[in-house]
Length: 215
Image (cartoon, rainbow, N blue to C red; front, side, top):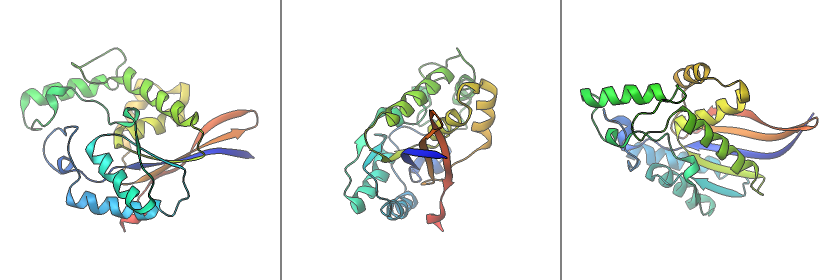
């Protein structure tokens, strides 16, 4: 038997304009028309949940998704940098994926995301993003609210999920495999429960990438 102490509903943002372009997405990319429709659909679904607080990454695509939820629920979002997407090297933002120099930097950065101690310019690396996932999970665990909705990003969402599932057995190799072999749909919903099992409080993955609201 387990005692549920907290439930956190994670929502990936709607499709952004740069999600569908052959470029390395910049932080300030807004939602596309399809993304705004997706945000409206997930907002209607989230409105059926009795939740205490809405938290969002402050990037435009997550803010717009959170604002769609606010329109229906009247929950004013709190913004936290903890839930932003993996931070790419600044020189990549907005560059064409066909640009050879950008491709080289992107390859170096992607390798750094699965290699402890390796860094590509000012981009986040493996050590950074795992440490941030730990901080984000601790932040949520220590909140007083019991039911929380968080609007975040696909890669960082997957990072939190694998951290919960593998805990201290997480390695560079299994993180690489999980990040390559798992996906989340735009506005997909994933859910973690913080529960007491016997004498231990732990996170458990309850739902992953539910996007039934998209039809």
